[in-house]
Length: 182
Image 1 (cartoon, rainbow, N blue to C red):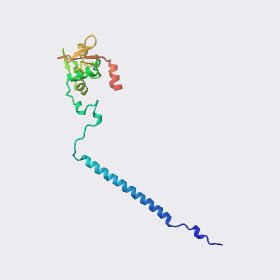
Image 2: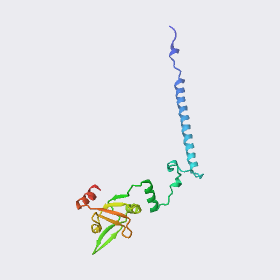
Image 3: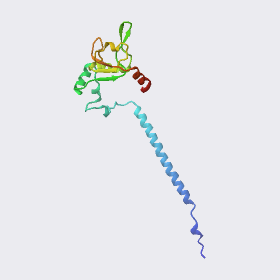
Image 4: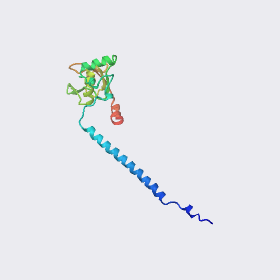
């Protein structure tokens, strides 16, 4: 019988060659990752260095105008002009819980209070400039005494420019809002 033992021998170098190839591929991949990270770090550093000012971003350009065209000197007249041009039939109506002017009783007199409020500070000049209407809860102790038959009062008192329309809430509605919904 012939000796066939040489056919069953698997060269022992084959698994090591395979492992060596895998390690080589991993080293190349690691070198690529490190190189990209180094390049990204250098690019970030370069972008922080002073250089020429870049032009406005496209999202700041509107209707073919540059971003500098949007720098408008705002005034009541400018606001009225833009509203008349862009929204000719529009009315400015503000609806809020906070009213811009509160009338309170103080003895036999009625005292006018302008509340310190971010909402009032932001929207009152716009409503005034556009002769709008502000609808709000009349919570002052004398608010009902100064309105007309339609629950309206022209404000500000020294130069009426817009209408404050007050709505009235029952005690139950106030409690349901402040202690319930809100």
